[in-house]
Amino acid sequence: MDNSGSDVNNAGFEENADRDDLMKKTGKNLTKKTGGAISRDTLDIKSSSVPTALLGDLQSLIESARVRVAIGVNSEMVLLYWDIGERVRKEILRDERAAYGKQVLETLSDQLVGQYGPGFTRTNLFNMVRFAEIFPDRSIIHTLSEQVSWSHFRSIIYIEDPLAREFYTEMCRLERWSVRTLQAKIQGMLFERTALSKKPEELARKELAALREEDRMTPDLVFRNPYFLEFLGLSDTFSEKDLENSILRELELFILELGTDFSFVARQKRITVDAEDYYIDLLFYHRKLRRLVAIDLKIGKFKAADKGQMELYLRWLDKYDRQPGEETPIGLILCAGSSVGHVELLELESSSIRVAEYLTELPPREVLVKKLKAAVTNARERLAKPGKGE
Image (cartoon, rainbow, N blue to C red):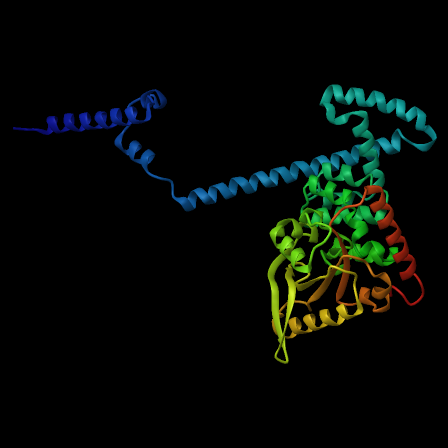
C-alpha cells in the first residue's frame, strides 16, 4: 500500500503542531505577522541565534556612523553660527551704525525665530557675533568644530584673557571635556593655577601654539598651583599618613583634580640606595607627557631639603624604573603652605621638580580670585626681567 500521502499529511500536521506550539509559547499570531503559513526553514532561521561576532560588528558600524553624523551636524552648526555672526557683525553692527544695527537685529531675530525656532533669539545672535569677533579666522573654527561644540564655545567666548581662552579651547579639543567639565574648570580657575599662566605672554603663546599645532603637552600645562583637595574632608589637624590615606580613598576625585591622563602606579614605592630604604608617597604616570610622576606629600611649608629628597627619587626612577620610550621622570611636592622665595632661589621653575600648595578648605571665591590673579601678575613680572623666562 502506498503511504506517501499519509507521510505528507503527517509532515503537514507536525509543521502545524510546531507552529501552534510556538504561538502558544510566544503569545503571538505568527500567521498575521507573515501573512501566511510559516515553513519549518523559516522557524529554524528565527530560532537560531545571531553570531555574536556579526552582531558586535554591526553594532560598531551603527555606533560609528552615529558618531560621524553627530560630529558632522555639530561642525556644520558651529560653522553656520560663525557665518551668521560674521555677516551680522559686518553688515548690521558696524560701529558707525551701532544704534540702528541693534534695532535691525531685533527685527531680524523675530523673523528668524518665527521661521526657524528659538535658536536665533537676540541673545543667541549676539553670541554668534561675539563668536566671530573672538575667532576671526574661519579656518581655525573649521578645524575646531569637529571636537568643540557650540555649547563649549558659548562658555569660552566670554573669557576676557586671550591666553586663557586659547588654553581652554585647546584643552577642550585635546581632552574632549564635556560642557559641564569645561564650566567647572573655568569656575575653578584652572588656567590661573597652571604654570603656563605665570609665564610672559610671548612664551605662553609659543607653548599654546605647540599644543594647537602638534598636540604637544608640557609640564607647565599639566601641573598647577594650588590644588583643591577639599573633597578629602580632612580636619584641621592631620598627618602625612592621613593625607595619603584620604587621597587613596578618594583616588578618582584626586586624579580629576590632577588632570586627565594621570594613571595611578603605586603608593609608598620603595627604593633602595646603599642598603637604605626610601619611600615615594605616590607614583603616577602621565600618558601624554610619557613620564613617571613622583608625588611627595608635606603637611608643612616647602623646605630646601625637600628638593634633595625629590632629586634622589627622580634619579633612582630614571635609572631603574624608566621604560624605553619614556621621558625623564618628574616630581611634584605637595605642601600645605607656599614658599615662593625658596622655589625661586632654588630655580625649581626650570627644573624637573614642581612645588605646589594644596587647599583642604576653599576660601571665599573673591579671596581666591584675588590671590590667583596676584600670583599670575607677580610671576609674569618676575619672569619678564632680563635673564628670566628665556
